[in-house]
Structure formats: structure tokens, C-alpha cells
Length: 265
Length: 216
Image (tube, rainbow over all chains, first blue to last red; front, side):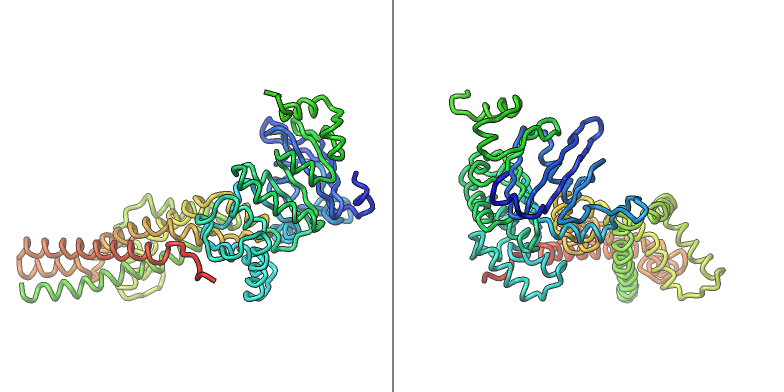
């Protein structure tokens, strides 16, 4: 673990997470810790459970077993005094999710709203900020992701890279403790990927706590404090970028990384 | 002929009043029940489904008779016009729930997930994200429903609501001008429904096209 963060408090703790879809085990006994300000990147083949892990954190998927703490609070419910598990109500879960920003592979911008309204919607309606303030902040966030001048455009009028940057601004507008990125550039061509990665790089420099699922290994190496490799629902290896990319210990990690080596084809 | 058309036009006004009233009130209840059917407590689902089942599997004329005979027996005495609107409303809400529900469910799951991930409750997500996108998809089937209502309102003639069909009937009974009156009545229904359809298409274009905000 990176020296710079090992003294920081734990922000996210995932313990012994299990998730099945029918007969497929999507997650098997997954445990992971993310400290405040830490940048964690998860890599692995498609279907290895990376996205499921991310989606379990904010309970878009409800884990079958295991626990998730965000900033010391159980996600999705709590234990009563007598040790019984009490499922969180819809309202409680919504409140917990406000602290976790999520960026999706397919952007998922609200199709009927302008870029500005996409970003301002959450602060205005969920955080109950005055409309003028929410919009002013949204404008600043759009400028931060290099989209000043595009405020009034609908998602359909923006390129994929622009849409994804609006989506990042939308998530940031809630001032989350943790940002989740679920393959944010997988639907983008190399040029648009670059636009998005540059924004993510800036966030990383600002000590945003990030958990990123990606196939962009260059980004992982450059940004990550910690890299985790998943295979068949298991986190098989966790380490610094140097440990994972230069001296992978697990044969699966080695095999996966070999696919990226020059001359591999 | 000179006095037939004005009489029919006055009756047509009643037909339009009844139909539009049933549609608008029906949309209010259709939306409420349709939304409840999608995100409301599960307890409601069988009740709503049962209601839809009753409406869809009984003839409208029977529903009209039921309103005409059963409401007074329950001690509720209402003007015929109101009984007619209520019968039409009872029928239309059943169909409108089935317009609202699929429209809501047709909004991409990803939109709902994005709303969830921001921390919206399901009701807030419905109001801010799902309903605005689904509303547009409800307009064509609602236009269809309005055309159905205009035609179905003719059944109210059986309980002597003086709408277009009833008026035609009355004029034929006194003048024996079958052909002229029937053709006129049919033409009036036709023109009315066409005008309403065009109006709805215009509404769909003007109000429900996503427009970007003013350039800043």
C-alpha cells in the first residue's frame, strides 16, 4: 500500500462479499479496503466481477453476503442492539448513496435535461440547495471538466467523451466521499478516452478517493495507489502498480497482463 | 336540414365535453394509479390489476347500465351528464393505467440507476427522471384513447344523455330523415376525431420535444 495513504483513515471497507446471479458466482469472498484519498484501480477480464463489486458498493446490486462499510457506516442496513440485521429503507439507502458518486460505462445522463440541469438536479432536489446556487455550482463543475459553453446542450447533442465528463460533473456535484468509475472509457474511441482520462487524472491529483474499474492499464499505472486483479469473482491479487504490473505473483495476473504486452499478437 | 345541423352541433358540444372531461380526469387517475402500480406498495398491485381486469372484460354498455341503475340504489342521485362522465371515466381509467404503466417501464433502466446512484428516492426519481421521459410516449396512445372516448360516449345515449348519437336518434324519430341524419352524425364524429388527433400531434411536437435551455 502506498506510503502516502497508509496513515489515512479507512473510507471504504468491503469484507467477504458474495454475489450470485442465478448459477453464476459473480463475486466470491471479495474483500477490499480503500483509504481516504486513495486511488484504487480494479482490472481483470470482462465478467470477472469488477463491475458487480462496484455496483454492490452503492447497492445497485444487493450483495448476497458480506458487509460494506462506508466511513464507518454499514451500507444497506444496520445491526440492531440484539444483533439482528435491519434492511435499510428506501429513504435511508438513498441518503447513503449520496456519499458515493458513480460514473457509468454508458454515461446514463438524463436524456431530457441539458448538461447544466443534469449536474444541478441532484444538489437542487436532493441536497435542497437554492436553484440559483445549484446552477452556479453546476456551471463551475462543467468548466472544471472543460465543458464551459456546453451548458445548454442536451446529452444527444454531446459526444460520448463530453457526455461522460458531464456525468463526472453530475456525480461530483453531490460532493461524494467516494467516486466509483465503472469502465468509464470502454464506450469511447481513443481520443474521447483521453479527454475523460485527463479529467480523472485531475481528480486524482486533487486527492479524490476513487475506485476505478478500467481496461486502461496505462492510466492504472500512472494514477493508482493500489491495483487489484479480479478473476471469476475473486480478488486474486492486490498491490502497488509496480507489484502488479512489473512483478505479478499470481499466474492469472501474469496471463492477463501478457495479453497487453507488445508483440503479444 | 336547416335546423338539424344546429341541434346536432349542440349535442356534439356535449359529446366533446363528456369525452374531454373523461380523458383529463382519467389521465389524473390513470397517472396516479399507473405510478402506484409501478413503484407503489405491492399491496396495491392486485387491487389495480383487478380493476383493470373488470374494465377490460365487461362491455362498456354494461358499465353504463351499472352506473345508471346502481348509483341511485346506493342513494347517489346525480344528473345524467355526470353519471355519463363517471361511467366513461371508470372505463377510461382502466385503459389509461395500461397506457401509463408500460410508458413508465419503457424508460431505460440506466436512467433509474443514475437517479438511484445520485441518492434520489424512488418517488423523486419518478418525478424528475422517469415521468418526464415517459410522458412523451403516453401522448400517441392517449390520443387513441380520446378517439375511443368520443366514440364510446355514443353508448351514453342508452341512458338518455343528450349527446350526438342521442340527438341524431331523436331527430330521426321526429323527421324520419334516416340517411341525412346518419351521414351528418357520422361526419361530425369523423371531423371531431380528426381535429382532436391533429391537436394531439401538435401538442406532442410542441410540448414534448426535449428542448435545450437558452444559450448562456
